[in-house]
Length: 550
Image (cartoon, rainbow, N blue to C red):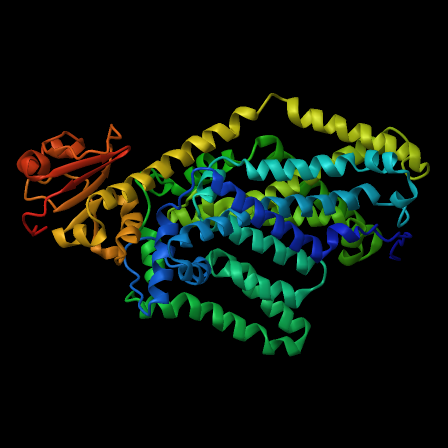
């Protein structure tokens, strides 16, 4: 059977969107924006405090990886350098983490815009947009702008994403770098893509399953890259494993820590963790109209590829003919596959935190937003012969883009209640910053780190252990977490606990108060011995008259 061939026009290029220079400008913008956000209440959270401590320890020629979060080379590379700046170290890391989170959303929008632009220009001669007047060019690109805006705001306001990233978690920065690597690979800069891909692999081990096969494919494609790929893979493994050994952990402490470091509310504790994680934790992160659109795009693209494979005689020609659809579908397949992988991790005992799913969220939004742009192009084509009259085509594209935007916004119903508001984000950040101010203020009021450490044993709430260790300038194991069960024995010498109800500068003096399990535990037995200081929302209990055996 003779293959049917059809003339193909080259897809219209977008030099600005494809420019690596634009990516650098975007990252510079994100750094400035990250610095501006420090005007909001700002503090790292549990995991970032661990990385800050380890960076400071490395700078001082020591490293003790115990307690705290899992070891991650990528953020510690930054926090080690930032430790040179003393008390500014946490703020410098917050700027990078917040900039990276914003960059991830901007890269999702950029990749979506590139796909949507190719959908708009698909089937037309190269450069037809440039022939239009500026207003008509804007009209023709309405589907592109709407799809990019959907990807930008959808990812940026994903539930549980803004607050953790503002608190210094690394996943936004990591997956932003991953999308930059994806774009460089898309543009044929495979060496750059693989080199950049090393960085996100230093934060999320799941990315190894994409990065390492990509490196092997590069070696198969170009033999001389065997001088580049294996050394980078060896470097990646060394940065994960060597510091753990030098820091006093077992070689595979990363795996054991991650499997046991989860909250009681984690899906891992459910009867069927895989399904609970996928359906109750991950699926609600993206609005259904985006997920359904992404799934429909994947299915329709598969139909087109099979059809054109039969007409054109080979898969390569079919993919070239449907290039933007295939690109968007691939993003969706990898995104949904990422979610399945995180759900499988949860099934075998890992935490399944929503932060880990963000790469899938970014890719699903790219696919789903591109699907709306594709639908707008289809609607414009259905309204007239798009291939003939550029001015009419631009008008129809603009109208169709607005129609699909309204469809997204209002059918089958409003969805804004699913998204976190700016005010709710600020409230969450303000409380975390007040905790930090309370800890720092009470330590200073009590005489400083040396005075508190001289008292004896130190305990605090579990999620504040790393912050207290940073402020007291000690290794994380020096600080104990408050137990979850009552203990009527002799209490610790120093306890810092969230729960203060006043903001008075004066010490309350030796006096019993009631706070949680203290009612029947240590405080009831030894309350008269403790000096109590409060700075909302934190209370400091100190008893330096004895040395606890706890």
